[in-house]
Amino acid sequence: MPDKSQLFWLFFRFSGRVNRAAYVLGFLLMLVTMSFPLYQFMRVHPESGAAQLWSMLFGLSFLVFLWAHIAFSVKRLHDFDKPGLFAVALFIPVISIFAFIALCFYPGTPGPNQFGHQTNAPQ
Image 1 (cartoon, one colour):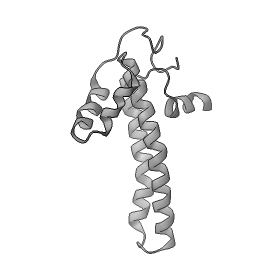
Image 2 (spheres, one colour):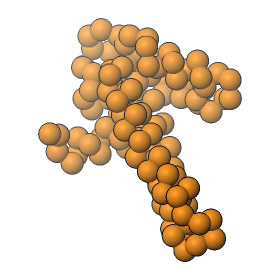
Image 3 (tube, rainbow, N blue to C red):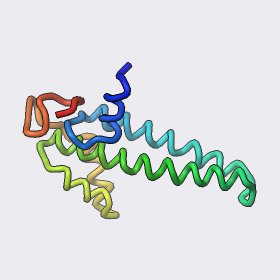
Image 4 (cartoon, rainbow, N blue to C red):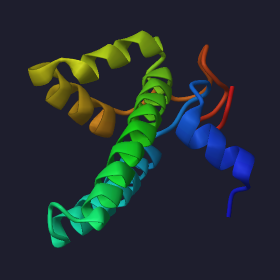
């Protein structure tokens, strides 16, 4: 199991590279984690205190995982030897679908590049 600094780098830092498998698995983990507060919110009465709590937790998890998704996408772009600024494409409505699919399926640059010597490691 990776230590805390490696997990912090994986989810919140913008340096280094990640491969396709790490990108997809990280996205799925974020999706499942974000879905739990939303599911709990939908189970309770909308005007209850629990609904307020679950909606606040969903909003907080959304912000945290939005940052993490951007960081993952930048590292995935680094694996293509492209600048992280291209992650802006994930916020353009129609293009975002194709950009996400490309990040999931397009193979990265083999060997070292300007963003790191190997995949799944900080620069």
